[in-house]
Image 1 (cartoon, rainbow, N blue to C red):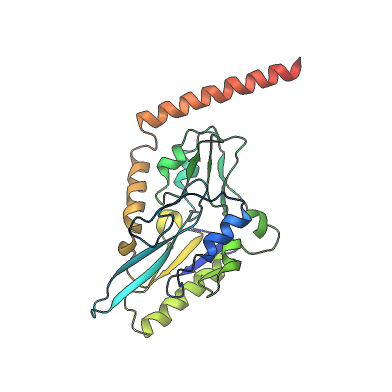
Image 2: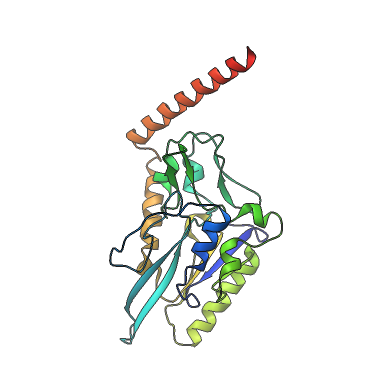
Length: 258
């Protein structure tokens, strides 16, 4: 469970208008390159996270119990889990917790084995082919550790994103759900309170999390954890990449001593 004073973000789907200002702000602040995309029949663009896209707004539509249609916008990004599968699966400690419960990756010690990519239930970690390391959302750790808000939060025009301590964010999320239920959203809920030890990004949803494939993703991650993180193929990649890393370091040290 996150500490009360840990950093946290609240995403409120009931206030989100799908403008993607958060996506743009994330790209700008983190100097992430643009990616060529094409229309695949969805408003989501790009439709998934990559090594160069750390936030992707996803679009869901359906019918409420009373027959009224809904069109929800849901944030896709790293959840900064308290029991993060990516951290548990990393063989070098490159993926680790920072102060405030934020999960980041140290590119200097990442060997590119991609165990974390396989482990993440939210598909938030991706391999950068050009650099040979993985990338993911850092919750703008460089900003928040200096007293500022994450770029995505600062850019949101409707207050669908809020940043604060975990204690503040959780209380805000639970109060928002209470208000939504009073307004007729019977299935309003807070997502992230129990998943993977509790996540540092909480969602206020107007529909059950199953509408957005969220529980399924977590169950699959927990199943992988119970049976061992690494398949034979991933284990081989870890060993191969680890050997390459060790040999490279040894050669570098040898060269430095000459």
